[in-house]
Length: 120
Ligand code: HEC
Picture 1 (tube, rainbow, N blue to C red):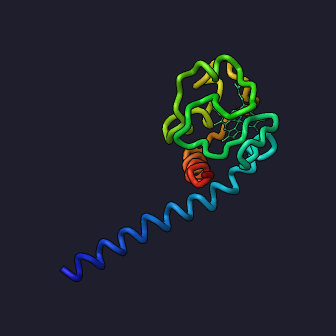
Picture 2: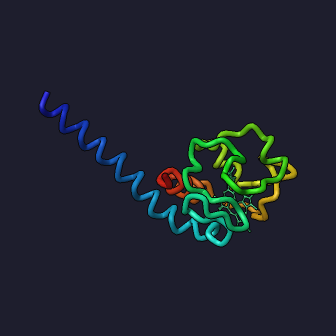
């Protein structure tokens, strides 16, 4: 039984540190976004603040004027939708206004999203 516990703690530790490592790399990937997106609540630049973005509905940052396409998209920002949007913003939301051509590498996007999840 004791062995089983240590096995699970090692497993837990590993998955936690993998996530932490992803988030650290993701913070570097966020350099792609930082010119348009603040991570401070309520601070909108050319793009809306990304504070608390994970789990939120699209188009609801207070005081930001979104495109109709994004506002009416009905999207909730989770791993899947963020992954698709960051890969190809116009692909997920045609007529949206985010002037970003996309992050092609799936591992980069995964790390970036791990970082976005910490913004709360
Ligand atoms: C050149 C400026 C620019 C860059 C770079 C940029 N964005 Fe955006 N982003 C915008 C704009 C403008 C919008 C609003 C789009 C609309 O209204 O259709 C937006 C919207 C978003 C939204 C939707 C927010 C919400 O409240 O629904 C997310 C998520 C997002 N961007 C993530 C990112 C990420 C992650 C990156 C970096 C990989 C990034 N953006 C890079 C300008 C930018």
